[in-house]
Image (tube, rainbow, N blue to C red; front, side, top):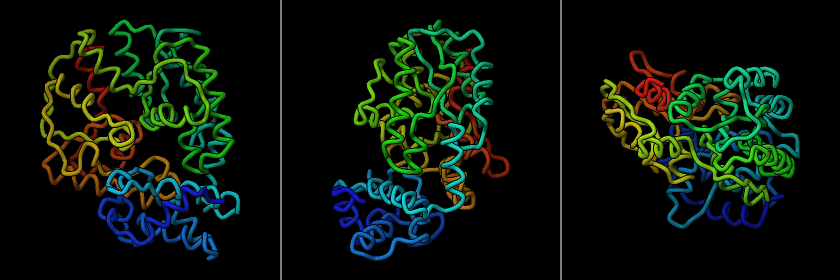
Length: 370
């Protein structure tokens, strides 16, 4: 069941404690089983004949797959490799926790993790771009989280496109990118097949650029699609990188906003996986906002919890978000600026009294009077 690479990485991680101080789940729960080392030990024992039961499966799903452990590992080991494969085993052996199974079923049946009917998603897309074109220079891929939880963020990006004179379109029926399903069941053939279907739809728009709002989807497009043989013809760009370039080209001219005591939360996928930390800060600076950096920032960013984890483990998700808010409070921030729909919703849902969350693109649309 496990690949040789997964076995190698699990064996390397099972007796190493060096990344435990960075694991957002372990820090939030205080449980040893929620550390990368413990998951490596469980997989290592499974390989050697120890029973892999429901409790082992639960431990594998109580992980954000944020990559903090991987980024901190000086020897280059990657716990997400064996964690994803352990999740695949849990699915095959019908050991998946009930809450997780509900989310898996939602993705398979509805194309999103929120049990929202696909027809509702289609209506949201039609509302966002009622005059949708079949082809354009830029394809805007929004992602299920923004469509369900934060459509106003997608609206803000579209207003910025119009303000800058961008020739854009969206998909009529936006299929899921594979990021959530891949995290839930591993990178199995079913995930690859759905990704190839999406790639065909994207290529049909003849877009030169594919601008992706959700950093998790951007990561999958950039890193996993080439490995899966999904040939995207257009250049994949994060929304932050694309919008920052428009500001540099003077196609967007933001006014200064009066926002004090703000900090910026780096999305894990954007900062660590895509190595992108400057564009968002360029956008913030262009609006005249000075930020207070949290202790764990940029590529060291602490995950605030994910929409995915929060769907099936809400208590753990809430604890992780609260720990990130603690970081913000310690640096004197009252406003948390985000550049990810999932981070926005998670942090907003768990904001302490008197603290607020602002989305980067919504602020910029206001500053540009878009």
